[in-house]
Amino acid sequence: MTDKQPIRRALVSVYDKTGLPELARALADAGVEIVSTGSTAATIREQGIDVVDVAAVTGFPEMLDGRVKTLHPKVHGGILADRRLEDHVAQLEQHGIAPFDLVVVNLYPFEETVAAGGTFAEIIEKIDIGGPSMVRGAAKNFASVAVVVDPEDYRTAAEAAVAGGFSLDERQELAAVAFTRTAEYDSAISDWMLEQLQELDLPVGEAEDQDEEDVDPETYILDMSDEDAESVGLRSLRYGENPHQRARVAVTDEDEPGIAGAEQLGGKAMSYNNYVDADAAVRAAYDHELPCVAVIKHNNPCGIAVAPEGEDIALAHARAHGTDPVSAYGGVIATNRTVTLAMAQQVKPVFTEVILAPDYEDEALELLRSKKNLRILRLQGAYRRPVEVREIWGGSLIQDADAIDAEGDEPGGWTLAAGEAADEATLVDLAFAWRAVRAVKSNAILLAKDGAAVGIGMGQVNRLDSCRLAVSRANSLGEHAQGEEAPERARGAVAASDAFFPFADGAQILIDAGVRAIVQPGGSIRDEEVVEACRAAGVTLYLTGTRHFAH
Image 1 (cartoon, rainbow, N blue to C red):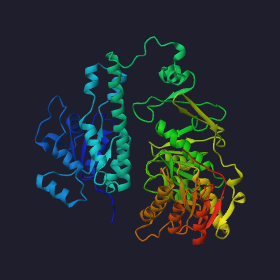
Image 2 (image 1 turned 30 degrees about the vertical axis):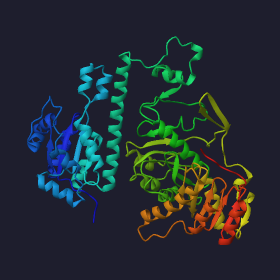
Image 3 (image 1 turned 135 degrees about the horizontal axis):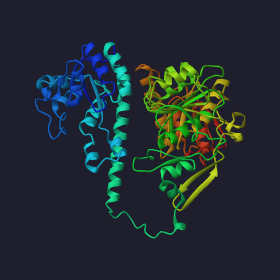
Image 4 (image 1 turned 120 degrees about the vertical axis):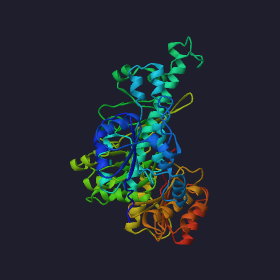
């Protein structure tokens, strides 16, 4: 069995005709039926290649100056039908709709028209409707359809047509690229529309006659022109955490530029959210002395693991990815060692936003660069962050940065409170879990086995739910990674808690799941209840006396 979807019928509708003749020729030579629109169809015919007009498929001519061409069930039914479902296939047959296996679309040049100073009417006409609809439909239905939005992927599409189609993973990666493109496109339209409203002088707030001394310095930074910002070392980001938020990044220490000034070796420009997740990923990976890989999603680790010194870093990556292979899709990867070719080969099939490392083997870098949307960053120096600053309404909070440096962070400073002293292997796993849980948002519980996280409960409003989540994710994701007969991964694992258990019930959830040892700070007025629960179950319990909240 194969999950490749053969390419028998393709819908091609592109504004940018770069590479179109070569793609059409390759598809035709592979026996693919090409359906196309307007000038795209004309360009293909000029090459002597057979092409079917969309109007012949829909039975309806293009209208409204081309505004309506593909918005028809004969088109979108062929794109959106999930051919895994018998009912969808039957409906296609009932209505005489032929499915599409490949959709090749690029959008009207809205951004370019704005940048070129187009008139209001010209810009409005460059807001694509049918194109994004086809792209989003095909991307949603990646189970049955491959979507290509970038001329740089035409060669790949041509090769796939000859080789039996795209695999499911490849179709999903193409879908992610497509959704990114439509998101950027809609954001550009939104930004332009808001600018037009401001120029209409609608009431947007009382900002008149504001004294210079009342100007907030952070707001001033955002209000600067791009040219002025660049002159003082500020880089503009496309937008902030959300598309309506402005954002810039500044390198505050040229000698130790860290992530803000990391050397980018490939991929698209970094976004605000990329930087936030990258910082969390590097902090997590650099907490460990052994070769370590951390996979971060939404500022939380969905995987983290170490490998023995001297082993290929690919081993740590495989273990980290195995923690939660579902959430690793679209994540940020950081490692504290040079990325090898073996690790790059593991990363390549997985859609990843950013990868950060102190260096890359030449062959590894070449392979990773073949993923044109993957942001590749090279880091310099050791991870250092002496203080942390957080803005609040009316002021700022400033504190020493949390770090692994207290006496209670090493097993030699722990207190054995219940059970037998851990053997060497168990103690190594406990030490790993204790360092790794620091990267998890509180309330945090991390289960580990053989130098890798196997279950993580993060960000819950009570520790009981974090315990449940860590256990359930360990076991359910173990089945996803290894098959339905996979053993429960929580059984035989060790657990770390970033703060004390306020009651014994959280620890009991871990005990009932088969956890063999626990490390936690202690300090609750009910510590003895937790100790007694572990003692009764024969579970080893260590107290560190050190807490690692991460809010």
